[in-house]
Image (cartoon, rainbow, N blue to C red; front, side, top):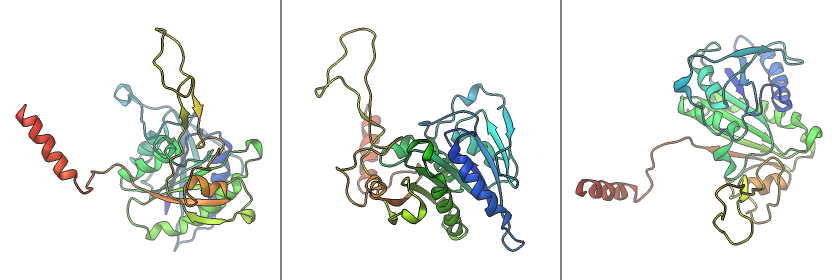
Length: 280
């Protein structure tokens, strides 16, 4: 199994270092019957919140990269690329850094990616992009508590999860969120449902929305519980992803990439829309 490793915090972030160090040992343990390899293609700078954006690629002729030597890593080549996480995934999948991977592993993000933040996360965006390319993906994020964040816990869980990917369905994407605890202190691992938590809690001066009175100014933002610290999850259900992390559980959520909507009533809606456009 070949891995492409990326993140959205940048090639020099402590989370990806912990992950790649753990994966280095995983690669070294490969055998002829179980060949393992990995390459790191991560943004050269922080692209948090980039989602699955690739930027204005129509004005790019090439992308700059630089080799990095990560501490304690001897079996994995590591590169920083002047690109967002999704673009790192695309370039790494289409031959820019060697053979096509089987799984894209993204993280470890400094801060959980739960609730609505899943849509905006560069960490998750890389794995959803992988799915669009026919690959499988694992996004790993961890509750952030500063310099003492125990990334090793999330790294260990991620390596253990690799065991399921050879037999997993095509385009499988898992979103793993881990509380800031040593592995032995975890309450367990649960299937987390996507909550209503969001990156932005409010974008207003007060409780009542009002239009700006000046031609120019600023809009105050109040961050929600999603990133980087896990905030108030009291309004979540017990099996919601944010609530699980707050309770000391690691949360695993399967995700789907962009696909055509086939829900009940959609066909009728499209027929109505076509009728309106043809009539006008």
